Image (cartoon, rainbow, N blue to C red; front, side, top):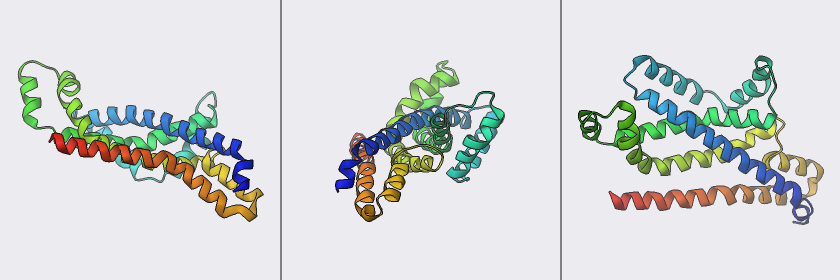
Length: 216
């Protein structure tokens, strides 16, 4: 326990970096996922095909491969090499976006078709029907699965520790290397830090799921 207190500063820095990766990666995943879900239900066949291919490709490759591309390949293509933390955020956002898109698409499919048809019959465009009628109802239904996606994203941020990012996992690795006699207490302390993030997310998901079930 003493080693945790002595290294509280570095553990806090790792915790905050994990939070930063979660927030920025999650926001990026929501934006890309929303665009992908919209394209998958678009009346344009080429957009649907592109979104389907993107979803199937990204969600079926390991996260490590996405990180390798972002950290080692993308800087060779981009004129200016972004900081590693930015590349890690992009990697997490890209990898998580198909799961967000599929969650959103399931919610959209859960909205009765008659509502979209009624909206189109009164002259609303596809975009207006989606943003005014369909998405508000779909989002209410998909909040619990989306939070589960973000819980998985929280744990996936540990992959960034292998790519020059000092987050919780990298902090734990450094501490265990330098304090071999306190490995168990270090791992317990780091695990508690992850639980501080994921347990509240799980509780929020449970409350929202219960509320939505009552509303139905």
